[in-house]
Each structure stands twice: as C-alpha cells, then as structure tokens.
Image 1: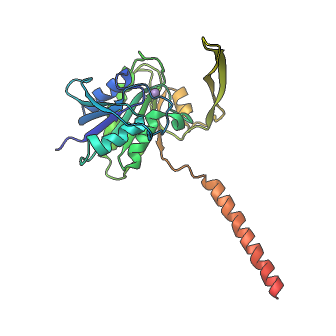
Image 2 (image 1 turned 90 degrees about the vertical axis):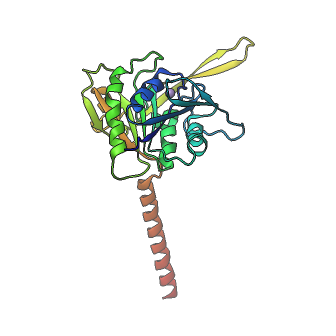
Length: 270
Ligand code: MN
C-alpha cells in the first residue's frame, strides 16, 4: 500500500523541539514533508503575508526528511506547501505542532499552530493541531508522543469526511498520569489582559502584553475541564464563526416585522 503523505508544520519555528517530536511520530506512519516558519510565529493567528515576498529554503534539520523553512507565517507555510512544495500531490494529512503551550478554549483564535491546521482543513485536507500545556523550550514531549500516532492513524483511516480538523491539547503530566482522551467542546474562557509599561533606552514608552487565563465555564464537557482533570482533550473545530443563535433571533424579529408591515398594509387597504 502507498504510504500516506503527511505535511508537518508549526508556529514555534522549524528548530523547536515540539516539531521534532511531531516529525518523529508522523514519519512512523507515512512520508513526511515539513514546511515550517524560520522564526517563532506564536500568536500570529491566521495572518498571511501580502506586501512582502516569501522565501522558501530547503534545509537539513531532520534526518532523511524533506524540510523547508519559510520566511512567512504558519498559514503562509501551508499555502506554499500546497501550491509550491507539494504541487500536484495529494496531501493525506496535515499535522501542526507540537505547540509549546496550550491552545485550548479561546487560544484557538490567536494560535498560529491551529490556524495552520485550519488552513489545511479549508483546503479539504484532514488536519490536527497538537499542543502541550508547557510553554518552555525544553518541555518534555515524551508523554505526548505516546498518544500522537493513535490520533494520526484515526484521522488517516477514517472512511469519510474531508477537511476535518481536530484541536488536540495534552496536559503536562507523565505517561502514567495521563488518564486518556476526552472528546470535548471548547470552554467559554478568556484572557484578562494587562500591559506592562516601561521605557526604552531612548526614553520612549513601550507596552508589553501579559494576561491571565480566566475560565468561568465549569461544565465537565469542556477542553479546560478535561485538561485540568488529567485527560487529553480533543475538540473537533471549524472555521465558521457565524452566531447561529443570533441569526435565528434576528430572522425571527425580521419575520415579525414583515408580518406586522403586511398586517398594517392590509388594514389600510381594507
Ligand atoms: Mn507556539
């Protein structure tokens, strides 16, 4: 059987330990091609580069693996992979990460890791973003690696569905401490932010973003709950940001308005 083609990318940069861990696991399951940023791109969300040229350079970062570093954002990497590096080839799976830090809950909208995975999903490619709840450069990815091939195989072997996207977050625990996997919804949490103000050597003020993650959603079906309780969280995600509840409410109001106008018109003509 033909080996599946797996595109690997991330937002922490091609030399981060997290992407190395992911490349190691992905190469057990298929042919791996890496297209990843040449510098850290965390928090870049779905940004794309329009006003500057993009550079792609073939690099030897992983043994026996085709790898390209890109001067752009994580989403630029996926676009270049699809239209340049792997042009005319079918990508069977895109995996992004392993991110150094959580992408649970609201973090998904800021995340370069998840936006890269999302971009692949928009192109009809099944896709998974992996994140470990440890922001440090020398985080221990070994317990996470244990679970990754199973999740990748699940996505590769699914007989249906195109462009499906999973947001996978892994708690910072040992292999024995991780209790298993929970399918979840995104918790309704947010960042309460603060800017630390200082002055640069020329006396000009600068502002440095800091924040605290606040979760007011205590339900047990969320990713934040699963992670806090020792589980890996999997949230099937999608790009559609439509507020269906509001849409229905507004449509109902519109219907009432139209019905009222019609009634008035009839009353007048009667
Ligand atoms: Mn990152």
